[in-house]
Length: 83
Image 1 (tube, rainbow, N blue to C red):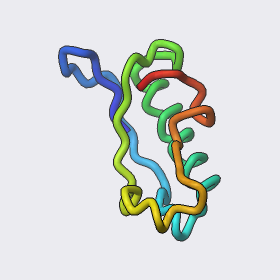
Image 2: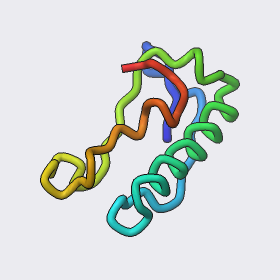
Image 3: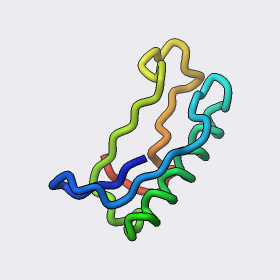
Image 4: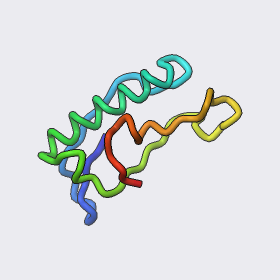
């Protein structure tokens, strides 16, 4: 997970655990993303409410027919309204 300014300056970076929804489950993925996010934000000295945009790539997320009920790990689990 990388936290950067709108100018591209990296403020904080961390790695996370398993985010494969097929093995970790949807709740497991959301939990891993939240933990990685908190670590990266802490390293950057930034709070969740300061986040103005986000981008995530989850393997096979685009295969809607395989997703049980869909997945939006960013909200509300991660606690921000950033697009």
